[in-house]
Image (cartoon, rainbow, N blue to C red; front, top):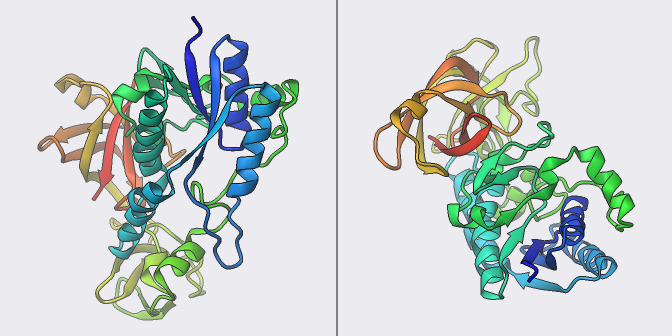
Length: 349
């Protein structure tokens, strides 16, 4: 009997090709659109209806059943509120990672299994072999960084077929399968919210922010910021303080409503050779030797750096780097790799 696969169809080219490939491989495929956000923001129309209709069109062309799961309420509380709380507290959270953890590989996975699915599939650029999360063939598009908090149980029952392809080949496959999403541009902005930028989204959700001082390392006030929540460590654009050398954000004080900057690219506030992690999460059981021989990625597409993880307890640890990393940002994820396999990570504090 054919295995039943529920494919998360987002209305984009990657998930469309995922469904087409799995049907071609002989699976019993059902397309599912996850409705996570439908609210417009002034100046930005939420694209959910267009995406939903594109997903439905793909299902019709592939002649597969199609349904919608409405996770809007859960997405608001588990992803958006998490993100907003982080920004209010002066850190820079990653909503895409939380969306994968709470929505795609928990709610979607559980709903699909309850509906009678044997497996789920997504259009992520990553590979899964025997439940292990491996880098995509297209290293430039690899998305394992965003997937490190997926549950072990869900990964054992997940397919990610486009992890075996380069992006340009995925576009060609979409044309071969006559999919209406073949030339659709990749989505930008916050995971499901659409093209809205983070600054506009924060202003809409949290209101206009109180301006405050931009201060250099000598305590000199250089200018005024538009709201401390908008600035992140290492940022050098959008400061509007002019002058000769570029300024970099090296810190902020939410209570004082101050943003701290330097022109010193070598500042020890910009470069770290060790850092603390909380909320550790592992996809594999690692031994002491493994922990000494990890590689870490501290932002999407950043180079891997050799490191050692010293666990303080189940939740917390210290990462000792073999070379310094620039612009480590509290709230972001540090993700560990061992022999091209994503094995876990944690949140930078």
